[in-house]
Image (cartoon, rainbow, N blue to C red):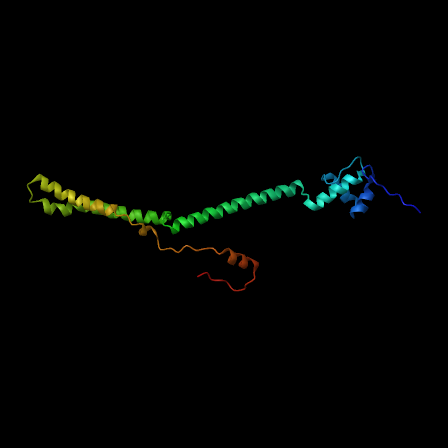
Length: 195
C-alpha cells in the first residue's frame, strides 16, 4: 500500500468540506472567513490549499479584525486620547492653582468687588475728610497738596495687591489612581480616606 506523497501542494484546490474539516469549522464559517477576506476562493466552493493555510496561520497570528472591530478600536483609542488630554489639562489647572497662578472666577469676582467698593467709598469720603482741613486755607498750593495727599492715599490702598487674597484657603483634592482602581474593583468593603 503506497500512499501518494505530494512534494508541491501549491496547485492543490480543495472544496469547502475539506477546508472545514482541516480547520475544524463548519461550511458556513469557512464561507464567512472567505467573505471577510481571510480565506481566498478561486471559484464558488473551491479553495487553493497552500495559500489558505498560510492566510489562516497569519490570521491566527495577527488576529484579523473586521471593519466594525477596527472602527470600534479606532474609536476606543480616540476616546482614550481625549480622556488622557482632559486628565493632563486638569492636572495642569490644579498645578497652576497650587502655584497661585490660577484662581476661581467666583473668588476673583468677590475680591475685586470688595476692593472696588472699598475704593469707591474711600473716594466718596475724600470731600468730607478734606473739607475741614482746607476750609481755613487761603493758599491754593496748600489746598492742592492736601487733596492730592488724600487721593494718593486712596490710590495707594488700591495698588496693594496681595496674591494671598486669591488663595481662597481651599484644599485641592489629589486623586490617587491606585485608590480609584481599588475602589472600582470592589476589593475593599470600607471606603478609604485620603488624608
